[in-house]
Length: 172
Image 1 (cartoon, rainbow, N blue to C red):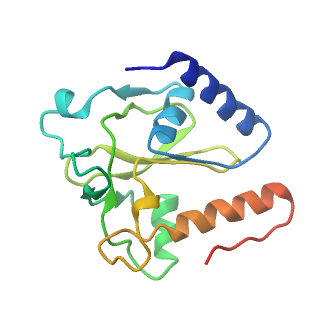
Image 2 (image 1 turned 180 degrees about the horizontal axis):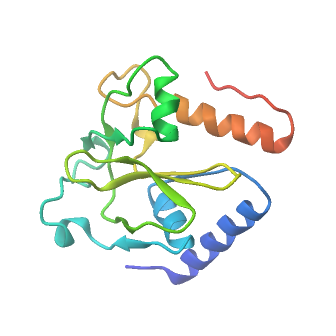
């Protein structure tokens, strides 16, 4: 099911933020919206269109996890490497759509190693623009089985601080 009014509104909002140089962090639908707004397309239903796909959504909702692999040389790869090593842990997956054709001005940052589904995208322009398919709000602090998403949040907050002109922000 689609909601054309919501889609149009959110794309207009994304474009306004980008035009103003404001950072954008898209989560799940937000990552998909970023891709579509930049001219990309979506797999409409992973389970029925990609027969070899891993489960990216399940009845257990926020308990469905799978691994991600950062693309070597990507910004996420560098971000996690600078934190003291490789990213470990799974991500909470609650989606049935994903990037099919990548939009212009975007690059792939992470994929599912199980099936190659795109898990993260980033804008190549001067503004902070990151879309992740997973749900970091379900990654509880101290849970070693989940990817620690604080580096992503810290990076976003730093970009917001720079855009505001204060130059520094940290989450703890």
